[in-house]
Image (cartoon, rainbow, N blue to C red; front, side, top):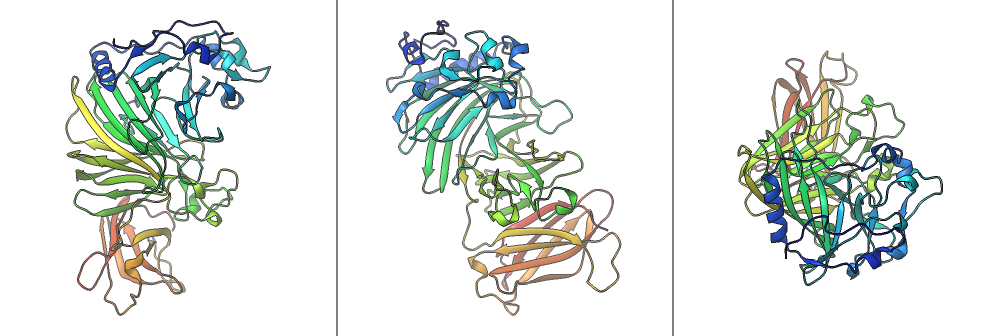
Length: 512
């Protein structure tokens, strides 16, 4: 029979979670979930009620992380390789989430919420919450229970600790009207089903129901830990979307990160650390095979950049600078933050990779979002299916015949010792890669630098950096008006063939 959400009755607080699993089960498949999401899209959206909202608001960020799931209540949906622990609700995760366990025969059982499943301080406000409130999400632990490597918590957010064991940027199920004048919509995963891995190499399978004012969705996640090819974790996503309403901007495979400042714009910040960011650039491998690198900015106002494409091969928010000396933060280790690479499966058609940058004055809020926007208008009743892998990697994939951008720096224009030109800045871009090995000033390497809404000033320098395997491209530029200058730059060999990825940026004259 088909599973119905919320089929389990709330049990007394003295009954353990493991005992609760003995309740009657129901059959459940991904096809059932798709049917459930599609049927829900035909009904008006009803926001999830939050029991005792005044009490839940007292569970602040600090109070929330003092509440821990009891280790002896740990769940094992796929045996010892993927232990699962559940999150308690709190001020920032107030809406209850239903959690179900699915076995290898498609039988499912709901896990009733219970305060007795958690350890909490004696003075925690959580003691006053009514029984049966609801979980906030879950996380998958390493086999020894310490620490977790992936978590699903809040709206449709999820993230992994990446190849170096340090949480940073997040992924989302969907993005609705991000960076627009109207309020952004945040659909949420209202229910999860956790079960044995369906595919070889996966640690566990997860299914999720997405609910929002404009969309419903049926999701399947294949979770893989320590994938050798990607050199990190892999999340395989199948998303079936059903539109409840028209949507102006539908963001597929969204990634969310934080960028405050780097060596490019250190003068804009007052913190003592040299750089602070979870990601320092957007990388794109276009459908035509071009590689693009767009360094991130912390703009004065919300900025939207669209990179038109068809059937993209991949894109992601990347942390390329992995040197601790460039961050000097031994608390949150920005040099260890994971990159995330979206690898589409099948044809995604025409659309654009879109980058949203939002102003920030500190490191506490995510202000960067990147996703795919289909060209097709999104209307009520439409259905979409997208499949993709998220590779949580140290760096984005590379080609041996193209060098990558490793540094972007901006400063005062002109030549040292000569009068400083007014309204002119200098941009310096460093490239590195095997293709540059053995090249020198006599190898016929030429810079290609193009600009709109501004002017690139001669001379343009392209030369090997002494004592390294890197090449440097340096040029001055000035604006035509108050809007940023759109610049595109790369190096070509003597045959006019590109030997570097294409660096693009919207640059402003910030130093005068």
